Image 1: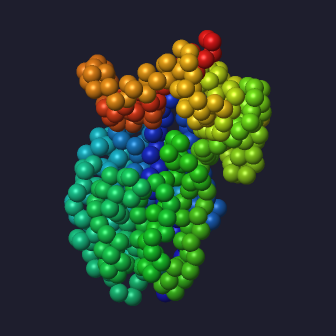
Image 2 (image 1 turned 180 degrees about the vertical axis):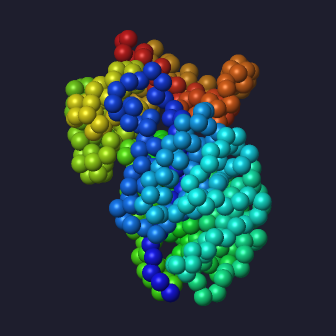
Length: 423
């Protein structure tokens, strides 16, 4: 057998719409908007620099139907670069770019091989003694175990299986094309190139069963380094796996300890130090997009709760002050605690203590909870589906889930802080 190398990538989600950027401007925001394209350009550059023998895309190249032809034209242009470099591409469509999802199509270079959706396809590369097996999704919701219909391995050559699968719902992803790890192991292939789960992970080493993760993080739930897997095969065996970073924007949750801070200036100093430290240790020269999580017991707890817009503006100002395309703040979460605990507040013989006691009792007040059920449920029903399906705000989430006792518990700190500021 001969030796060869290939790149395994998946879940590129070209031109995926990024939430929360409406009305925002600046080079950092524009970099985030274009991140999926820039990461794909970087992937193509890596393939050419590493002189790989072929590239595998294991589903979700696109994020759904194109708004116009520009998404497809961009992809064809990048495929042209690989074609000129003599690097073929083996493309499989997943749930986001299933045959039923993408209504527009463009002719691809003849060096791009697309797996069919009616039944598994196999492509043999004679010069390398390798064969690739795979099946694209015909529709978004594939509930059959596609592995069972994949062909038996061809003896004497290196067999690669390409599959877009939830593999039992890993990482909270929908369990499309469900199968088990044993199904993959027992198939007898030498390498499984998997897509759909956005976290890079080697699930098995004999044979290698690998999720490459997504190419570019698109929000805070896709934090950390992202990229593709470079696989080296020698004499029919995988001898090396290397994770190549292709992301151009890197998301991180940045905890900021505010223990013993006594004024808002100290808070901003702590935020600056935390961002600078994360840039130096984790960004690797990429734009760091961070969610600031303020923690600890501080005398300015109430002020932080009541001035979240000001906090976000100051945090973004701090990040922008580090230089162009160095850091950007997506959100500031106030998860601090007051120096004076809630029990002490409840024992106070004033309006603040009375409010605390009233709100504590409200959590078990059946009449109040029923009233909230009636009023808030009507409001929730009027929310768009996309808001209800992808909400992150804890208070809104409690309202949507109908957890009204939790809703009351969550608003207590805001009411208490507001009353104490007025006092």
